[in-house]
Length: 444
Image (tube, rainbow, N blue to C red; front, side):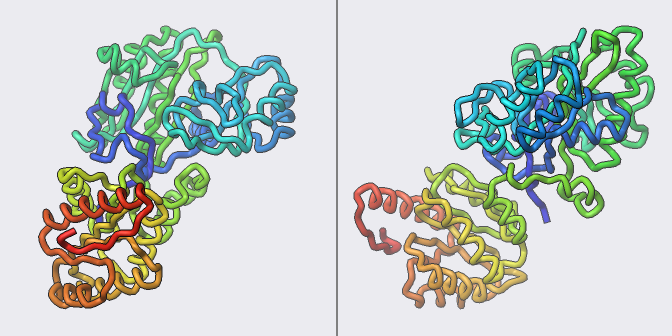
């Protein structure tokens, strides 16, 4: 079964690498890959022999002070550990600006940690709700002579890995892709050969590493690719990959993502997952075996099969409506799964109608209808539900729904069902605005 994964929205660098985003790109979506915090990414890079600045995580202000004392020196950086891009330009809910700050003493480390930990950081990727910072990463500040961008990604077009690199590292790669697309170079990797010495040297040379750092840069690129393959990664993004003033090749910042489908063989990696950085409803859905993604509309969708779910959302939009979610209950649309799905959908106060579009194959339509009726009764739902049940025993299902006396409307035709979903949604919104009650029939 096709499974939508959990990850940040695709960056322009992905597009530059010809990685095709799904139709859900740009919305809060379940990730294509598990993402882990920067300090954990740094630990993993160290395990593979990739140079990173010395640093350590702290989960309290007192720990931050102790870590800063341990690192020593009077030039460090404190970084809020939040799974979102644009941290440096973000703002905390207490007014503190910047999730990445230069600090010059353990006292400053403690001061900034107090203002970061336990507060939400709002960035261009988190939306207005922000994301909770539970820890900070304190590391030594290294000075770069040159900064580069390097990422290893899976390319859907070639169905293999690609290395995306740019001489313009240390800045917003989306801006680079937009303003200077020629500065981004994509190198396809033959999965049978891997990253050869010649390929790695060419990438390092094209980036602009000085001659004395070419070999070190080549080694780093090959080590990153080894990590990518051995850990079932979908993304390794180093920005910047730097040549320091003392000619070290260091990964100054890293974002790593891993394939959800490899969880069974990457237990150590998936043990690093931080569910506090994810939508609570989406976490709950995953625990129940449901693929659930919150969207911005007001028509709830309950569908079995990812392809049918996509088609359902498309036809809602074609009829002038907006889907409130993507929800795929999978092949077994059992009563328990239906109830959990309805709980997730109705937790969104914006939902004004629910479109149930299920093909009854493994589970008969009449069994689905019974589960649907039982759920609506037990939850005392009052918003209209449009049910399109196709497949085994669909006539019996239609009869059960019509005789139930609930706000469930059985419609066989997909277009008609979508139209009614949009119409009912508009009526409910109007009634809510007027603080009025409304009754429904298929004639509206």
